[in-house]
Length: 587
Image (tube, rainbow, N blue to C red; front, side, top):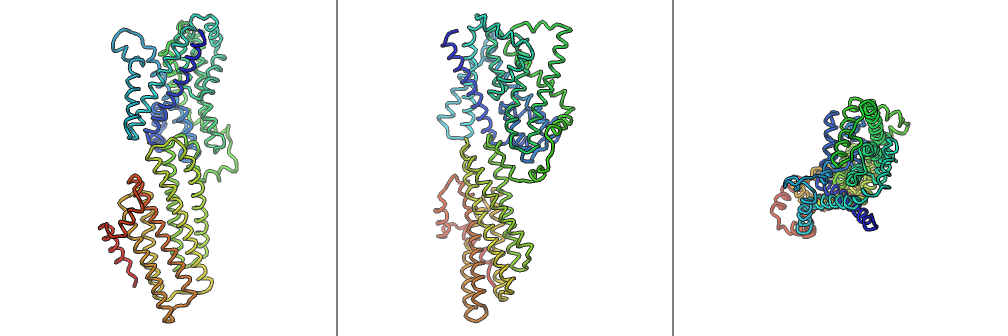
C-alpha cells in the first residue's frame, strides 16, 4: 500500500462522511419537521415509542440526531423522561438500517439482478437524477430529494473508494496482526467506542468497519467487540447535548449511555460464556459487510427486547445518578425552553417551535390589551399590576424569540421556513408594541381613578364603541397569526380603516363638547391619548395581517396592495369596510 492508496482511503472516508451528512440533512429538510412532531405527540405506549424511535432514525439515518432531539424535548418539558427512554431504545434499532444498506457493497454474483443491487451499478443513476433535480428545478421538495440522492451516491462512492484503497492491506502482515489485538474483547470495545466518539456516528463507524472487511484481516472475534464499543461511543453526542440542560434532559442522555452499557455487558457476558461452552467456529472466519450488519442488528434488537420491560428501572437509575435540586421546580416552568438550542440542528422543527412560542406571545398581548380596555370601565389596582406583568413577560418573549430566530435564520433553511422566520420577526415586534399600548391605556385608567375624573356620558358611549372595534381587530389579528388564516387576514384592513375614521370623529366630537362646556381640557388630553393608542393598536394588527398575506403570496408588494385598497379598487374591501362602518357607528 503506497501513499496514493492512503490518499484514496482518506478521500473515500471524506466522501463517505459527507455523503452520510448530506443524505441526513436532505431527509430532515424533506420531512419539514413532521417526523419530530410525530415523536413529540405519539409516544403514549412503550411499544409505540420504540417503533417510532426506530422509524424516525431509519429515515434520518442517525440515532445520535434522534437522541439529541429527544433530549431537547425532555429539556423543554414537552416529553416525559419515561417516553424518552422508549424513543432512545427505538433509535438504537433504527440505526441498524444504515449498515444493511452499506452491506449491499459486498453483494457478489454474476446474475443481472444481483449485479443491479450493487451500489456501483445503481448509485450513478441516482446521482444523475439527483443532480438534475438540484440544477434544473426550483421546487424545494425536489431539491431536497436531489440532495438525498446525491448524498446516497456520494456515500456509496466513498464506501467503494475506501474498500478499494484498503484492499492491498490484505497482503501486509503488520496490518493483519494489528487487528488480532482487537480480538481481546476489552481492547476491541475501547477501540470501537473511541472511533465512534470521535466521529460521533455509530452508522459511520460501522460503515468504516464494513469497508475494512475487504482486506480479510477482520474476523468476527475482532468485529464483535468493536461493534459493541461503537454502540457505547455513539452516546457521546447525547451526553454533550445534555450539558447545560435541565436535570431531566441530562437524565435522558444518561439513559442512552446506561442502555448501551447494560446491553453490551449482558450481550457480551452471555455470548462469551456460551462461546466458552460451545466454541463458536464462525469467530475465526473473516467478517463480511452483511455479517457486521447482522451482528449490529442482533445486538440492538436483543438489548431492546431485554431492557424494554425494565424501562422504569432505567428511569430510576437515571434519577439516582442525576438527583433533584431545589432549583429544578423553577426551571421546569420556563416556557422559553421550547426554544431549545438542540432543535437548531433540525431547522424545520425549530421553526414550528418558534411558531408555538410566538402564538403564546400573541395570546398574552391580546389578554393584556383586553384587560386594559376593561379597566376604563372598572379600574382595579390588581388588574393594573397584572397588565404590567404581562407587558414585561411579552417583552421577554420578544427578546428570547428574536434572539433564537436570528440564530435559526443562519441555518440551512427551506424557502418556506425562511419566509416563516421573516414573518415571525416582523410580527413579534407588533405584538410587543400592542402590549406597550395596553400599558398606556392602563396608565390613563389609573390617572382617571387617582384623580377622580370621569368622561361625559356621551364620551363613555363613544369610547365603548371604539373599544369594541379594537377588541374585534385584535381578536382577528391574533387568530390570523395563530391559525395562518389568510381569508380572515383580508378582513383586518377594512376594520383598521374604520378605526382610523373613528379616531378622527372622536376627536372632532370632543372639540364640539369642549366648546359647549361639556368637557374639560384635561379630560381632552386623556381622551386624545386613549384614541391615539387605540388607533396604533389597530395599525399593528394591520401590519400582522398584511405580513401574513405577503408571506403566503410569496413576497408581494405590501405598499401596492395597500394603495389598491385605499383607492377603492378592491370590491371585497369596500363591502367589508361599509359593513364595519355600520357596525361601529358612534351614537
